[in-house]
Length: 615
Image 1 (cartoon, helix red, strand yellow):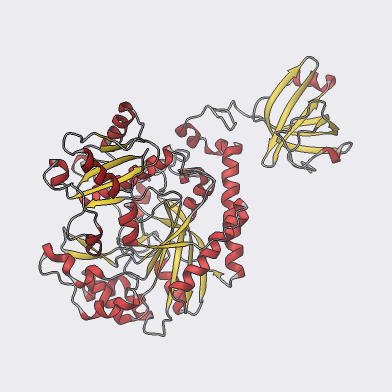
Image 2 (cartoon, helix red, strand yellow; image 1 turned 30 degrees about the vertical axis):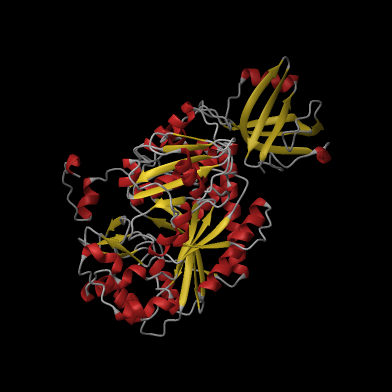
């Protein structure tokens, strides 16, 4: 037996017991004729006391950091207790020890505040995983998985695995493809999600399915993306949208309770996609704080139902060319910031000019406590006119109005980012505060101007909202005049879809699915697929719909992202045992890598050099 207890198990109640521990040497501290060693394993740290006789052995055969050690001794009370350790009241008076394995000097310190950079730690990830900070993240990940599985099991969901080697049907992100040796010149694809398989399981009668499943997308990476990621993937039969929302509100509330001790009893707020875009500038708003977007000017063809709600202000009336000629003019009122200095407003202007924000400048109005107004656009507008603008933005005395002008899509995205940035600077976005939101009624289609056709906003298996099904069936998707695409009936069809948002992050999305062959064929046709193409790509699904497919719908949660938010991190990499870097490389394995000629010959693949500058 290598050990009788773990390094986090012993307490003052174990005093007098003879125990055997095994683990890694964390620190070594010599005090004259005695030596203290902190021994670490997955469960904690225990202090070992080596007396005079054993200390001589250590001098003859020194230990080093990360040596694997087995030690037998008696539990005694510590004279200098450490309240920061669960074992801090005791130590082990060592009787004998064995070095199970030596260690080279680690390339970085195995501590929370390590001296290793990202690339170095990813290269030696097996050492990085020994650090408590990383261990806590993986423990949280496991706890979230366990909580979700327990809830789904209690609600009659069945965990069913689906294949990883499937057919490539490129839609949206690029597929990762896998050559087949037995079928020369043909390829599998790794699934971007188990979407069609879970629908087929509904056809098969497994009315409540789930999987905690790996998915693969060949796309550019960022903090919340990895080429392989994990979903909590779920599907249900004989349900409508309300059934789905209620079931999976319960799932997330259960996770909050189990992981954070939060009893989230309040109803989850619901918001339409159009309201989210109008009031917050994006479709995943952080509603932990206010500071809603004020729309002072928008293109006449956008948000048709909102045009009459735009407040009357002097903007666009020949006072200031930048405002007059802008397609969109939006603003936020930042509470209590009217005393910002010139240096601070200049810094905000530079912030919105950054390439990732993409604006040419920023205008501001300071709503002073005495009722006066000071602005970067003073020479274009009188005090009364500035007051009209501030009133339209619902600014109060002491507030700072920030205004952006420019093209619709870019400007709306920029004001959303600026709102989030100001919320962060003012402490409104707290890691320990959680706010859920359902966003509903997304457009079913988006118009792709380059191809003059409709594309699916979610995926081609999403059903229209029930009230819009007849509109979709009755009209052709053909767009006669590209300039008038917003007048086409398809532009106003809403999807029977829903996203769950947590603190400004989309953590889950799903829809009620199409389950009748005729409607599914109509959807494929609307997306520009010929009958032959739809049969080639999805003939198996269309065929299945002829054999009694039930109404069904589902949702998929971004498991890595959910864990990161619960753990207070912006990067999902921190919650994945062996992640890729921002270039999609595994620094530890040095992958991807070349394969040898024999493998290429077996796969009947010949490589050729491509001029990267032309890509």
